[in-house]
Length: 137
Image (cartoon, rainbow, N blue to C red; front, side, top):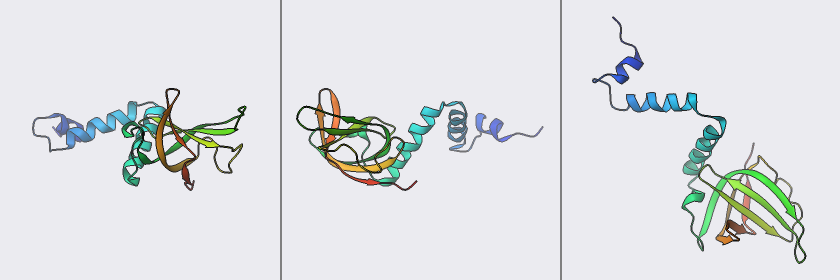
């Protein structure tokens, strides 16, 4: 009887890493789209050398990368603001540009890298007036 790769991975004599390969493959096949997207974004964070949002602490100057989930113009009494939610697979941070109504290229679904001082305001994680670089594609 011939032993298949799945059978050998489940057996006692499996090569190191074979069981992990099977487990990762099954997770990819059964995961929903949001989970797959979050894993892709997390791998981008690792490969770019940026900090995961979940690891950022208040007061640190951080560089984060991810995809914009939403972009909202918020007219305020004092200063208008443009707010964009950046998701990197581990968490979200709100990028806030004070005095701006619109920034070309800042739109939902766009990938970007942002750098600035990590802060907390009204229970949200924010970076005010971040330096940013739009990613191609």
